[in-house]
Image 1 (cartoon, rainbow, N blue to C red):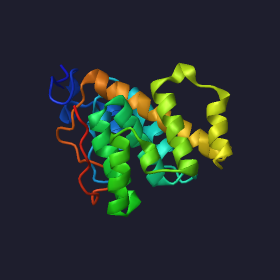
Image 2: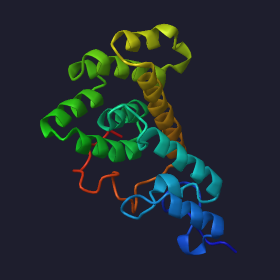
Image 3: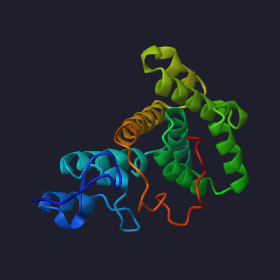
Length: 207
């Protein structure tokens, strides 16, 4: 019988690595981070490896594809704002760590983090970046209220349609992930926090 690990990283069982069958082993290897680990956000899929494969493909296409033109720091910042709005501590710890590393300016990073945690992007952003974050807030919290004017506001601020699509995909990806993480009670137990090993510790979300 396949050995599972009840209650260690989530509210559902997960399959221990040493008990993984060929399909799960392939999926785990495909999901490994640059540090060689598999984060719990991926490991929680172990009972259905094909959904892990889909998650990895979506994650990499949205945040780690060279064809994307949205600056990586901004994509991670938008994702971190979605984490705040959805109250997803797991995802915030990881992705604000990434954003902070990519911003490469500790003072600016602290200014941005303060604004995000206060749900006050106007305190740290203007122009195109602020338009993107306003779109982020509305799409995350009130998807049924979206209208063409929300996209037009970004376009009028100088955001290209290709970058508008990327912003939309970042928001949509994070909303999916937060429902996975919060809905299954996934913890960071054993995880390496952040994509970049050298990134400083992330901030905290109020529980």
